[in-house]
Image (cartoon, one colour):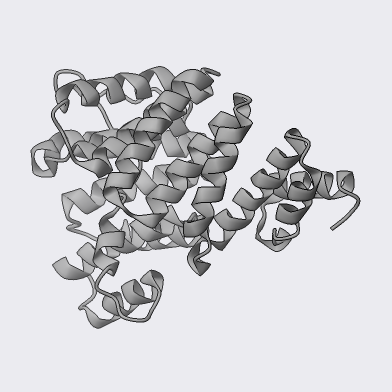
Length: 302
């Protein structure tokens, strides 16, 4: 599939993977005894609809839905907001970006490419108002989603070269994570591991549980695919400290499943059975559920 959207020209161009991936997380740090989703909904209900502050919080809510893979609700929210007149330009980019993502997810690639093009067009017009390299990584991730690996890498390399002195751990995490995706897609697991090691260092500096879970899980899985089973096991086991929180229950079951698989790969059958017994199959998507059933059969049932 050829992504025909014209590249932005700022000298070259670049991008990333969610409007501002930690915006909603930072906003929700002020919440008291409620989930981030509920807190965002409360704030939206309390603000005048379509006011500047309402749009600001709505942007955080879109970030949340995207990060949690609630694509049905994200699509509904975007479609309800897009027709509104006089949308803030930055929010408009965000809406186009997320709509392109969900359309691709729902197997509408031509429509997705159209909205990706609109996102780039608006971004070119308001680039100076962003002042944030995360937005550049964001667009590169959109190229990656549309299987335009060369364009995605060009943008990421441009961003990397123009922000060499950046010490922002969130930016470094997203940049390294997206470069790892490119290398992994090209079957360069050693290259992917290098960037995922960098992403983990940035996540540790950032100190956010969600980013640590992603970084540790991605690197552990790459080590596993490289046959470095002991290193993968140590990382997955370390990640359970974070995934044990209720909001990360799906990741918790996936990482336990991978630990069971690693037990089998290292001929540690008792350990494999111990980990598999802790997996909640109802938390698994189809691919992981198939693996669960295969391991359970090999281990004589759970």
